[in-house]
Length: 285
Image (cartoon, rainbow, N blue to C red; front, top):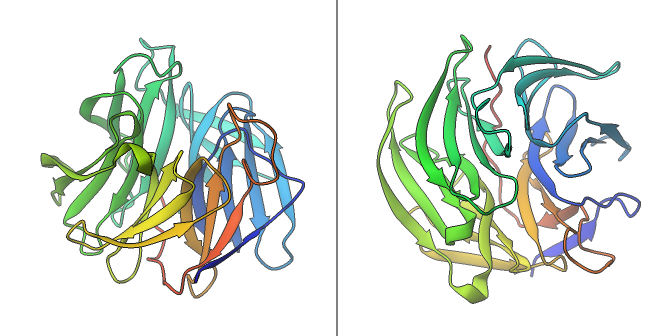
């Protein structure tokens, strides 16, 4: 039976997201989109620092040149900490001021994949983008209400990406040049499962998925069949990432927004799974 613990009892996120492990910093990063804030957990001593952000922030990714890349409501930017400095890179949607970034991740080629969404969650104005190391960007898919993920199969052949509002995880062929094709529904959630949120892939190729409104995380085999389900005390599970030198520590984020105050909702959890994660990638630009 899997065990879990609350990592920090004095930190509660309105909307935790953007789970990211940094071996270089020996730190686990995650964001609180609505606060807005960026959190850093030092693995060695367990200390947590919360950095106030100037606007909603959906994700962070390590940058090969140092620091982080973040997805803000106004676009993608470099982030330095200690002291805090933010330098804009690109805004792919200046014509959609009501949109914001929701989730993003780097692939093995050092590219960042990220989604945008309508802040009000009323319109299908979300899209999927790719930011290359040369800082050129491409719009690859559109028509999302609440895009989430993304994640990449162990062999790099597939891109997993979901529309949380449609309770569907999609799988697309991922070509070497960064293009995608043949998007197909891969996993559909029933109403009692909640909604698919953030995802990560383990070293055996299993796809771990956070259940928003489902109070659990699940592992799906590479063919999409359910392999494990781990119940958790928070109701709105949002994202997760394997951390630590052995990539055997799974940190899970959650959200308190829209819920009565509780001990668990909005908490950062560590879940003992016995699984080993894939190495995290960084932006090469």
